Length: 358
Image (cartoon, rainbow, N blue to C red):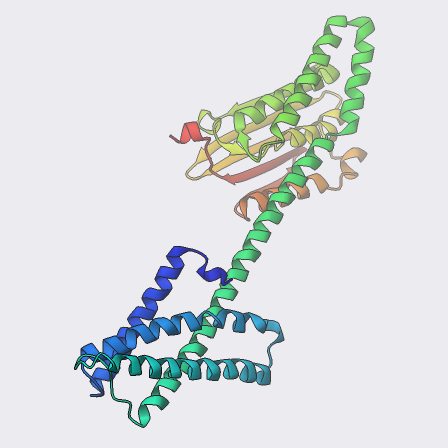
């Protein structure tokens, strides 16, 4: 079955085109003084609609030769041969239909077939069939492009799902082990602290699993997840770890990828706060300007630390690749270290939650 004629709308549109082509053929017959309008329309419209049925075979002719495997002689032989055959069949249909209209024995029916008339009709039928093949070629190309786009979109969705699946397993094992060790140590000296840490750890993992199922979440939800993470880390590091969050109220309802900030906070602690004797303050800010969401994270670092020198930057590169995939290259991630301070700035296209958008 011809897939391009698989619904009533496309069939109607196709035969509307052939109807107009029939009117055009009638106009040619009238302008060349072959017949009057009534005779021309009675001859042209039924025969052209019949040709519309014949032209559907152009789909199979076009499909018989894939674009990449076409050669001049193949194209000439198959396309030319099929056009010759259809042109001949249509010429005979025209001849038989004209014979039938003469039976009406009326002035408005039938046209005179001159010696040039069969040649003209044959050429018209052949050229129209070749044009039909070309049109189906174009439709095939467009359909292939749409399929490629759909496959690409499906691949991107699968890649994002795989990425989120990896995120679930990428929570630093050291963070989990250290948290469990801290809980174990606290059970003997601070049972209430151990209980609080256990609750925060459970809440953190519960939210991590829930939010990672979504492609994008409100910034407030990401901040809430980060607060559970920081509550656990503050129990471990005590006063060494200080966090200052300045979240613009306008940015709270902005959509961001889940697990966007938590890995950055984890890196700030691992490569910054942990190596400083007096610890330091991690500063997180967000603001909305025009059609963009700006998020910045800043933390002190020990430039002489071996832990900092051993960092490979893989996490930041993965973050750039992830945002590039999600936002089609419209996002930006910039980071730098200066004056014992590491700063990362993220710029995302502004997207709001449905409730805030209304």
